Amino acid sequence: MEEEAKTQTCQLLDLPWEDVLVPHILSHLPLQQLVSLQRVSKQFHSLVQVFLANCRSFTLSVIGPCIPKEAFCTMLKDNKVLQNLSLQNCSDWVSDKELLPVIGQNQHLQRVDMSGCACLTRHSLVAVSLSCMHLQHLGLAHCEWVDSLSLRSLADHCGGLQSIDLTACRQLKDDAICYMARKCLKLKSLSLAVNANITDESVEEVAKNCRELERLDLTGCLRVRNQSIRTLAEYCPKLQSLMVNHCHNVTESSLDPLRKRNVVIDVEPPLQRALVLLQDVLGFAPFINLQI
Image 1 (cartoon, rainbow, N blue to C red):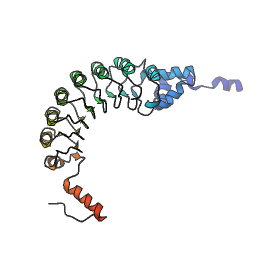
Image 2 (cartoon, rainbow, N blue to C red):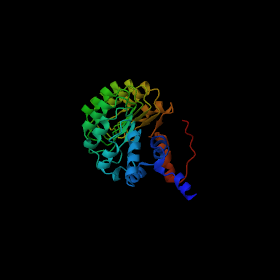
Image 3 (cartoon, rainbow, N blue to C red):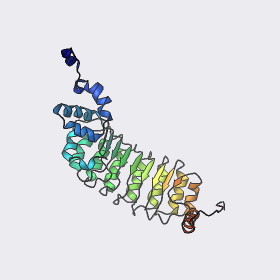
Image 4 (cartoon, rainbow, N blue to C red):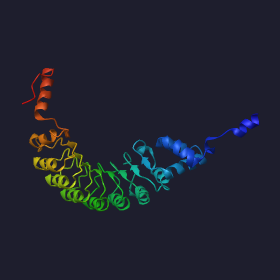
């Protein structure tokens, strides 16, 4: 009986890798646990590599600061089917040297997030534009290396782009944004926040070309004025969210038509702000008829 029991004992690694372990077990483990699992034995290392070679999504937002760049290169060296790549929190180590091979062999990428990756250069963005023809979502927040040349390359090759975050990409000026707006007509979400170079010219070009626009973030764009917000209201019927905090030249006269369409705006109307301040002073909410 004991010999029969031993014969029937099944080890985890005895299960079919590609039919059972990869799709039904490893796919549910967070990346951090997969990294740990690789260190258990050579067989587990091989198993994890099979999973990584076939995974569609690779996100380093949680363990980015902890993973050695050599491990990143090894983990994705065999993958050619990635659709989602997130490199948030990898600013301390990821450079063109590590990223370019991954981008070059993954032409099916639809979502790439390089936000905060300060050690990259324009070459990474050009590589994305040339390799990832099906790209739909791109995160470049706080990537100050993004310049007009690399953004134009993106616009020329990734016309199906639906969302792009250019927060604090301070090299960019109106000419680059206008060029992108004329090429990427399917944009639904765009952030130009924290860029003092952006003026009404950019916003108007986006409004007139990107009719599918649903979300626009202009936070801290100090040179944007009422004129472009009115154009936005006229040309973008699908707009759902507008962020204009710290846009000191944007007033309620241009925002009110959007509010009447139930567009979510991050700046309260002047009367509402006054009531909040009054409540802070009085310690209670005053009963005031707002229908004036």
